[in-house]
Amino acid sequence: MSRAGMRLQVPGVRGAGARVGVLLAVALLAPSLGRAQPPAVAQPAPSGVDAAEAGMVRATFDDAVRRALARNPNVIVATEEIRRVDAIVRQVRALSLPTLYGNVVYGRLDADRILGGGPTARVIAAADAVSINGIFTLPLVQTRGWVAWAHARENVGVTRLTAADVRRQVALATARAYLTVMAAKRVLEVMQRARVTAKAHYDYAHARRQGGVGNRIDEVRAAQELATDEAQVESAEANVVRAREALGVLLGVEQAVDTADEPALATAPSFAAALEDAERQRSDVRAARARLRLAENVYHDTWADFMPSLTVQFQPFYQNPASLTLPTTGWQATFALSVPFYDGGLRYGLRRERAALTVEARATLEGTVRQARADVRTAYEAARRAEAALVAAKQAAKLSRDALDLATLAYRAGATTNIEVIDAERRARDAGTTAAIAEDNAQQARIDLLASSGRFP
Image (cartoon, rainbow, N blue to C red; front, side, top):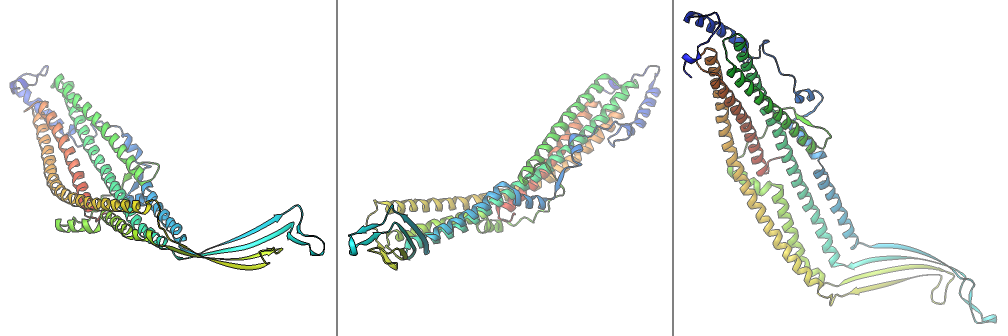
């Protein structure tokens, strides 16, 4: 549109001098309609997010991770799994330890059983009889039990490392959820600022039209942009609510949780140090390595299945009344030697199964180490590029705000149309959103780099 087409038409005012006077009046009025939220601009009503923040639970970054590690269901299950495996150790150990059982038997017959008659008659089975005995069993040679006991104890260590990896995953998910809440809040702030700017623009266009120096199309464009910003604010508020609820679920609480501070993340390690730490410190790598070691030990100890077992059993007893074969008191000892000559091929099947499990565990370890290295390479490159993108996004956001200021001033001075202002508003809004997302990406990349190298949590 040409400058001639932009001349203001005011009833009762004619001539260039009159137009200049009107422009000066509008220019003097412009600061009261700017983006600084002056009293003349109607402020939007408090959002649902702002209204809910008063009684909301807040947590710092460290406190959120600590709560998640204490109350998250996955962590609780992993902790209880350690207790379960420790209980299995006791069960397996019992097969290799002595046992002692006591038995009391009372028998009642309708009458005494008598052998013979006259003076030589003897009672061979009394009507009432009590028998008390104890059985003490001691495994002298129990190779299979001893080996199973050792493997069960080693499995406790594997389970502890697995639980540590679960804790790492929960802590990482919590950290990401915490940063997601912060990013959603930043995006919401950008949308709210854009709405305030659009509201000021609409008020200015409306005031011009009411004053007879504007036109309907400018007012409609400004109203359309304001409506668009209102819709995006509502969507951003929904995203904040969704992110807070997700954080609350991870923390194991029955309500949404909000962020309370900026996380102070540790310094990112060098690339070489990150690779070394990933192979040495990452809980998933350590757990995979422990599983391989356990599988190899179980396979190598297959020889125990071919070994004989020797058990001694000692049984004291009390019998009242005594019988023909049992005195009133006594004891007996029994030695039992068991040699497995043939079991239908069970031991050979177990050997093949254990060999396959060893190969699987070795392949799993190799894949875990390979994935850890890939995670470090990806996270390191992503962190480097995310930092560069953040610098560029912040610069773009600053320039877009400057461009919006210039476009607004030019429009109010009559040098441009409000199309340039609306375009600048959209670009400023998009650049602000990009900057907020870039900041979140940079922090997420830092968390990923620390986690991939085993330095978080």
